[in-house]
Length: 287
Image (cartoon, rainbow, N blue to C red; front, side, top):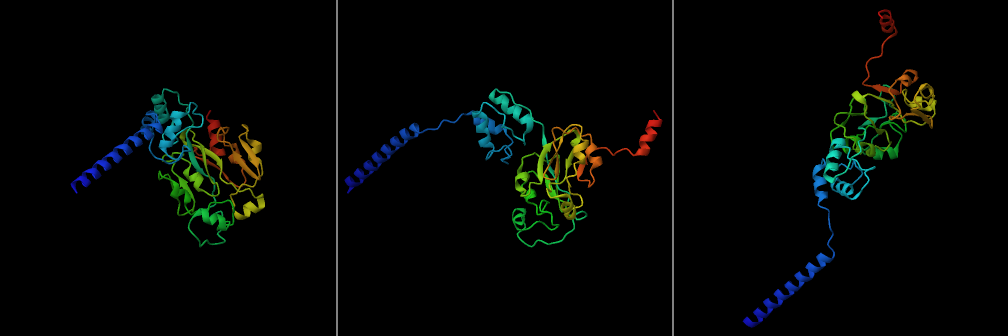
């Protein structure tokens, strides 16, 4: 009996030893080498795992930074230029600075300008509502107001205004991670260049319907009249499908387009108040 037990133990030890040796050689044969710099780069990144860089998370982005010689399309919007400079120092490279961006909501269809003609009583998500109907005001391009963008934001940078029913972005918190942009089924939210003092000029409408139809659904819709296009001295405005668009790179914030827009759909934000004709006259007399 004891002999049987001893033989069994020896057999099991032998099998275990043989299996360990086999596993060792298999592990060595199929070992995947991982650059230790990946861990260093990952530690230097913000760790938000928001996907704003276009990768599945900070780990995947760190691997791309280490493995790619060219960084033309590699950028962490959360960490910004300072963070990219730290990563570049770790890898002994140079980081190309990018202009900061901020999310902008291109819809101003508040109840004041867009009469409520229907009521939605389905699943409270923009993604589903977009598939079912045009919207409570009838505009098939306007904000649905159900907050998918708010749910997608990991930085508490966007909230729904209960009075207007529209999302509002807090510029100081926005990291330009692109999550809200992708969450919006109507492509209302856009990342635009962040100018000094957070000044912005943009067409706050994406409705491509003809003027009469667009204004019927929303009084502040773009009607494609081309007046803004005609006065822009910097060729920053393009007209396409009855809709004006202001290029944030070409725009010099001169505000000439704002003055001629008949529906006030071009918004100027964080600018000083415009001088009245009377104030300009007094100023001219005092010179």
